[in-house]
Image (spheres, rainbow, N blue to C red):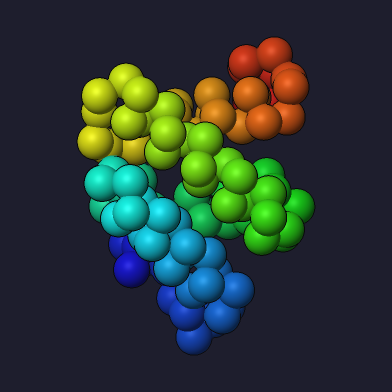
Length: 94
């Protein structure tokens, strides 16, 4: 589980946490340093609480890691994946 995510406080965050770790494990990507309550809340907000959008973003971010030959996802990876998924210029969401 993420460093600070508390499933007792929000079962949706628990499910989101499971999704992140499941897709990361399937892709061989380490997310331990990335996943905390802040990350999960931002991921949920960025994807408008829609599971399909979350899954699309996870797949894109982890595919970018694999394509680049890295096995650790970073916040920068997710920012770039978000920009590509939303067709926004990178940096316009900061």
